[in-house]
Length: 452
Image (cartoon, rainbow, N blue to C red; front, side, top):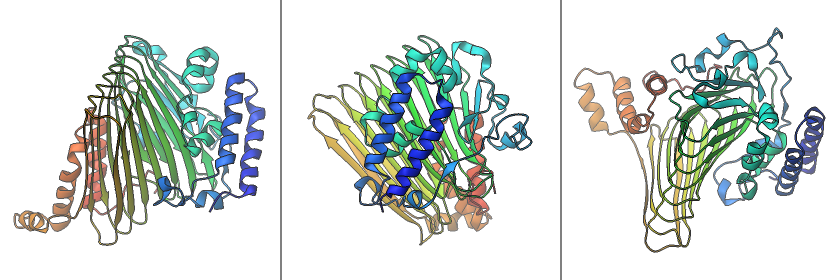
């Protein structure tokens, strides 16, 4: 099912209504928004007729009249979100800057920009368009505009605000930046378009934690885009924690552009949402660049999660490593579509991809499709995928030593995903998700955000 003319007209109306509130935006951004809307209108919403969406039905996006949430983020509004409401998703031990967005709008009363601590600039995009216009114009949406990511184009056309994290040249930040995007879901069928731009200068180093979560049990749609631009010899450690509520639709694109000798690691953890599509793409544009993609998804009920990765090796002597693991229970369904592209001339490429899945129910499903597209002859590339169930002999062994069956299965499942969690270098983040996952496994209760 393609988006109807009426649906396209609705998005055009939303665009025109928002344009009046963005009169202060720079001209280049207004022009880019118009181009993005035109491309989205031309291509329409994704359908299962497209190979990239073959196993994921997004027709609900065309059938539902999504609209922007009312602005209730002001601190003097009686319905405003408070810091207490954010407690399930905050990390008290993380003392770096924190930016909070409610329904896509910046909430300064819930945020702490850190006043430039350690030299890192953390601010809303609306402010960055005024204070760092040249940087944002140069970086924002450059690669997204070249791709066929139609939902990213919709984000560009309609995002209300977003976060800029700028690490100047030779700045080494020891404290992670936390970006929290919360959907209030006070009204049904609302949509927000979170946007993040991370600019890492030459010889810089930083960590960014990006959390997406929701309140309540109503349906809402969060459609996010994160762009990471790593200059020569930059190091970026990026965590994307998806804990949307149980009826949420979550679509996202993480786009990385890496220069010579840069190193970017992205960790994607997906526990929430009813219908989820995550795209992670990296373009290695300079010799010696290294990219690592780690992913973990644990779903149950009728949750559907689709992970698509793509690493584009354009220069020689680059390396990439992908490890995605999934745990699926009850009638949930997972999709993994991973691709490694090695361009002609990208010799001495070292690329590895692995997707492993554990099915805890006979009714759970996984569709996995690793791909290699190689146009060079001096490379080392490999990929693999596995699908299995818990070893019943191992369960019997643990039960024979006095461990209850549910706990035994939980321990074995945790052992399956432990190597992904161990790659999280911040203890507080790793321990939080270890606890949530163990609760999910042992008690049989899914962790689908804080709204239940």
